[in-house]
Length: 297
Image (tube, rainbow, N blue to C red; front, side):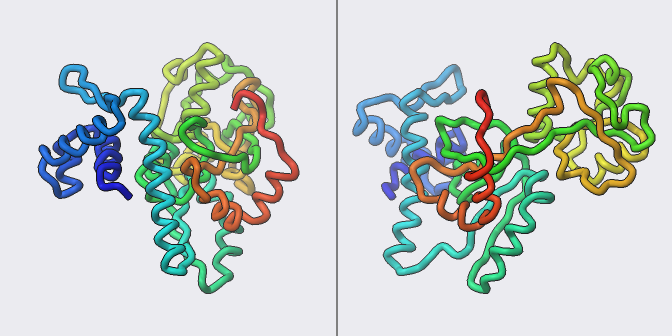
């Protein structure tokens, strides 16, 4: 891969010349010189300053997508030239999917003793950043993402439900938002796809988290379920997370508790989809044969 493109991608990640230079073990003038050479060869401006803040131009975003693809494909070329296969898949998954959906695929893939995986379970924001930095082959996420920046396909639709204590008056009911505002709402951390989906649907209905009696933010599904089961508050999450939880009940809420898409996301113009389909196996076959992505996703 062209060293100037590698420097360019590092600057795109750090958005700071000094930090990019430190990461690359180069001097700051050397980084500046490479970026200037790249701009000159392309005859376009890639970065601009607003005061002391560095910004990407539209042409920069275009080049970034191209360079990320080139970086991934260059690794594939190196493997092909050395007659090697990528046996260790680098997979990312959001917490819902990594903890509750992928286990069967992991078991099946690892039945082959030559197969290895590295699984990172994190929120959507961090996983997309890892894709940009070529640290993952693909990610399976429930959060929103740029469909112009990444390639993707629908894995499956998953029910999104409200949860409460089993003995709560809300359990098993169809409720309104007004019925819930007196409750403590327990949500995931900032950057979580589950939280973002809930907040977007809440705002679309004309409400915010601050409208609830109390808001608690917790990154652990185990802790959220324990608090909900003990009657401390309510939450919203995917059905697969609360299946077989004896102390938790569910409720529905128009406009909020509707099925949502799980997507497989990967770098554009690469063959990463082949690895995803190989790993996901029956999940992928089910998605391809049985489901269509809803409009507007």
